[in-house]
Length: 150
Image (cartoon, rainbow, N blue to C red; front, side, top):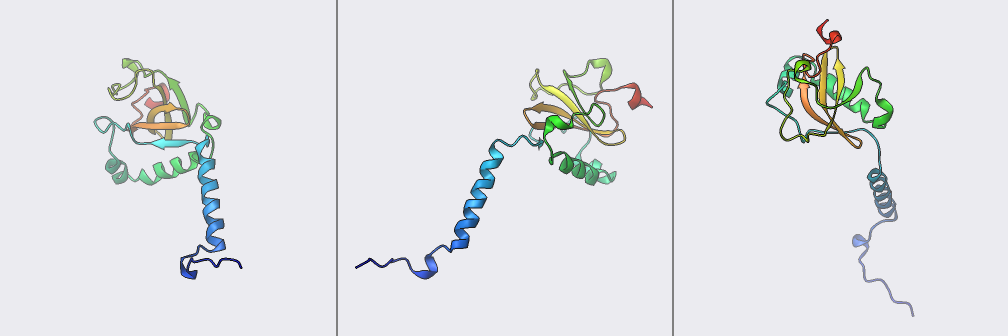
């Protein structure tokens, strides 16, 4: 005679719960090797540039969030266009910037910038597929160029 299950009906996981659980696990595993563009605020330098409150008061914080969301939908390397998104490499020389290299950012960081609107940019550095936002640069003074001055 077969043994009856001692698990009460209200304690059993449903068939659908098992399927949903396995789908969630499969989706999470897919993110491990994901090469999509990610952002980190871990190295944000609040002593230089502007604050989120400043960007909000100047009506561009929503633009920032929309741009970030758009970049997160594709792989980082496919989006480098040297127009809106540029990877510079080294930190700019003193005559080309109004910013100082923060002590908490590695000296060999690969610096980059993303245009948000017009002259408003994010400056930071790239590690793998992560863009570490370091400066909120409302006036494009991170890497001063002829275009930024016009």
